[in-house]
Length: 629
Image 1 (cartoon, rainbow, N blue to C red):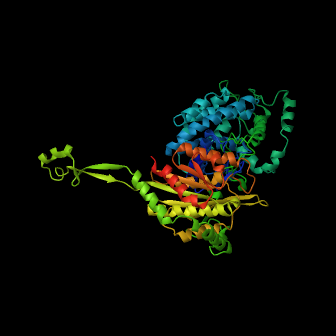
Image 2 (cartoon, rainbow, N blue to C red; image 1 turned 120 degrees about the vertical axis):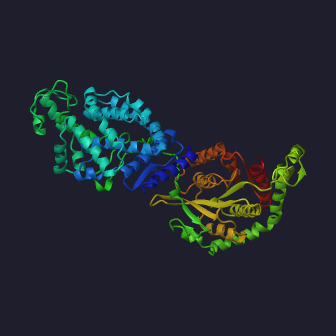
């Protein structure tokens, strides 16, 4: 799922970009949306396909709210879905409206939502059936069943799941006359008009259920207590008094055909209700519902806070985060977490590591001296190595004939064309032998630049990078050369993987001297090696290439180890490599430097212990991974 997680992350950012929203992936995060940023949990080894679908569908849902919803309607009336039954009903209706608009516009969202939402509805159904049949549960179940039936033309699987809810027949009967109005709202894309339609519909439904929308708006506006303070009020006080007066459980509606005190307070008409009129929810039950709404499980029911400006549009997306038993897992880094030091563009992402761009530091000069003294003099000349590879390609190249040419060897099967005497056709009776020595491939070289690589190991890696850079330049094969380490501050718990770009695909040629200087400059900061995240980052860049073959060469000296707590990093790295090997869109090869640990992680790998071995090992690598079909 880790490779698929890359596609999901790109999908989420592209979708959020439609509404100019940012996306941030956090550790152990309950997905939410604050109006400017969508916060999502990081993708880990334990992330399931169901959760990936939920992340994409829920992101589209929140983007649809930004595109189609006008939350100003509720803000003007100081009504929140977290405190008011009226706001809660509006929120569900508005969710239905924006989902319908998004599904009509984007077929992909329709399929995603109809695939992921039924699983959430099943969770809600199980949760509400386990609990007491409270007034709020009754309303939620009936609204879901009603909404999914109306939206069945777009989400048939949701309708199938919604039909399984055991609902209150009286509430169902109350909702039925409003079906056409919800359908009309689902076709209105304009923000203010569409949201006003669902709000007016919510008011009428609230009234039909026994509430007084005007009184509800007035109650919220004149309430001396802020929502936070009102939430602290014990929910047991009012229900206890009601139970004592009525001598019956408060959850059970106290319905009579006579005009009661509740109706007087709500301004109900004095005429007796018809026996066919649906029963309504009492004022005491609305009081209980207001308390229950504050404690609604936002992992299951999406709500938007439209009163508190600091929590504007904050939502619990329809995606439950299960943190049990995964406290030691390694959270996957997102693209935004990386500090990128690009030596080709001479830039960094945030400037925190800008000093590493200086190629004239004492550390860089020391690296170059050591490289020349301890490695360069012991390795065969680059020109000889390149010619060896070229000859190998010519030997292994497959020849084929091009038929129907005007020159070449006679093709006796096409001699009959001479009798036709058709210009431009009759003379094409030859065949030509074509030998293709061009490699349709692209290569990424990824170098571990952690502290344990200091000394001969990083010098060997530099020599291998120089050889590969030169030979692929001669062969006209696009190559990218990267390095990786990390940075961590225990005081702020800040952790960032660092990626060094020594040569990018866009840079057609980087000289040997510049490449050595680039690697030497980065040797000033060599700390941890979060292999899994860095391999994914390099893979994500390489997999976008259009060449037929793509090869990722990872040079490392051993066990993955980050600067922060790295429990779970080793199995995470192994899972990343295994998924790449299984996916087969990119060939991955591990080159161990003075260490055998690569054999524990890579299916295809070898080791280098002396500088003289580097050309031979690279030649074997190129033959095995690029020349073999």
